[in-house]
Image (cartoon, rainbow, N blue to C red):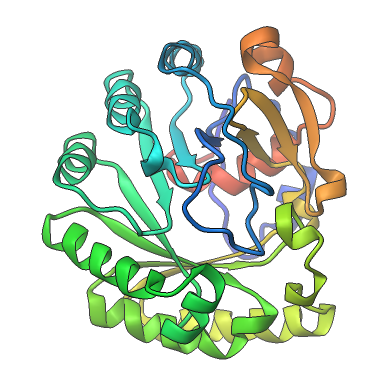
Length: 303
C-alpha cells in the first residue's frame, strides 16, 4: 500500500483512488461508559457499567499491535474512572501503539500524569464554552475543575488538546475557547461539529441546521487561517460524505461500530473478541478509502 499526499487540486485523483487496507490505522475505544457527568449530547449515549476486564483489553491490544495499528484514542464515558487506566496505557505503549485519552478534565492525580508522560500520551480535554455554558452542560464546578486540571497537567509537561463540540447552545463561544486555549498555553484545539449520535440523537435542539453548519464552518475555517497555528486548529465535520463509515470504534463490551453520520447509520460489524479484527474490519460497510483519507496525515510517505 502506498500513501498519497493530499494537496489542493488533487480532487480528481482522490476521487479515482481505490484503497484497500489490511487493518485500521487509528480507532476510538470506549473503555468505559461510566461517567461522573450526564451530558445531554454524550456520544456514548446512556451510561452502562458493563466493561471488559483488563485481561480482555490486553488481549485486544495484542491483536491490534500484531495488525500494526498506529494509534488508539481511549474514550468513555470518563476513562480515568477506570482504576486500571494506567495499566492500559502502559500496555498499549509497550506494544508500540500511540495513545490518546479523551477526558472531561474532572480528574487529576500524579500517577495519571506520570503515566501519560511516560507513554507519550496526548490528553484531550473537552470544554463546552465559558463557565456558565460548561457548568450548564456538566454541573456546577465542572468548568473550574477542567481548567484547573489542564493547568496541572500542563505544568507537569503533559501534551494537551482542547476538544470543543460545536452545538446550537454554544455557537457564540467559538472565539472564547480559542482565546482560552491561547491563555492556557494549550497548543492544539479541535472543533467538532455536532453529529446526531448518542444522546444528541434525541436532543435535536442541540443540532445545527444546514445553514448554521455552513455558516459556522466558514467561521472556523477563517479562524484557523488567522490563527497562524498558535494554537494549531483542527476542524471536523462528520456530515461530509467522505467521512461516512471511516471511523472505527470499539465499545465497552468489545462490539465494533462502523460510524456513520447519524445514529441510524452506525452499524455493529461484530465483536472483536468473538469475531476477530479481520472480520470486523472487512465488513462491507467499512469505508477503507474514507478511513485512509481521514488518517493518512499521520504518515510521511508519499506517491
